[in-house]
Length: 320
Length: 119
Image (cartoon, rainbow over all chains, first blue to last red; front, side, top):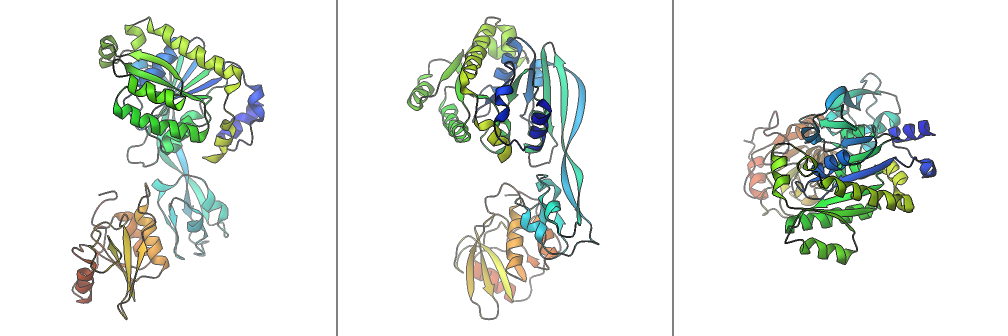
């Protein structure tokens, strides 16, 4: 069963949700996302990972600026290249029919009834051009787009993706990081900000999404975008209000109006900011916070055990 | 012969759009009789590959020359593969650029004049 899942995940071809009943209780996948950057996704992901019991795998999918490692200081013991298969056209077999260019949605291969042009940086590696080439003129060769590093600190295993500078699409690296999700651990995904492809790729097939926001008009604005996005995908989610204080009403009113659950508030505390400025986790500066993160986790885990696991999970594997 | 000029609007008195891939539209002009049609640039808002798409679209309708402000390397590669001549540095109105082209003194580019995503 597990083999099949792994294979399905790898190839993004999950058929239905047949395996949901087979899941181990401890396998939970939480995505920490936000609309706005700088709300504290990484802080929440790292502090949560450091607070809960049992094996934790922290998946840093913010591959344009991965920085969980700054808090965690892991010892890196493995490194893998992330490659996308890109087309190479064997001109002796190409009959310039133009089929490859018609198939490609990303204009990574262009044929104007001429010898095809290939733009590897735009390629998403779907293999469509090779599949549909009627003369078998296209082979796929690896194109390096980034790197995944795996390390450990205590009970927390960190998997971190880094996008190659100059490569325009983060999604293949996000996916490569997520392939390291473990069946026998709590998986915590630190997502990139925003609501476009990399963020979607990071939150998809999660059991639950924690949206981190701050009590400012900017935080609220981008939270509304993130809420709309997560709703459209159909994942269960809740809000964590970071740097909470006198202006919380703004976000809280929105959440009440939209019937969105506020999972936790972390007070705007100078000690947390000082720790952050030195790259130190909040739970190291204020040990009492650990209980807050543990409560956050058990609240979500209880909800999931009660049957809120996302039915959308399998479907989304197939769609992106 | 048909030529395309990147344009911010659908008429000859519209200002030239200085961007090729992210041009609002193209005026496709038939040099034989001066008639023209405005064509929306479908790839204008693509995150990547806008210039490639624009060049592909213009190649499909069989233009022989493209006139614009600036053009990046990928678009240039596609235009070249399609045998389309490129004229950069256009300013002012579409009509003005057309006049300049008609004068025959405009030299075709032999490369991109900007990097991708320049504007």
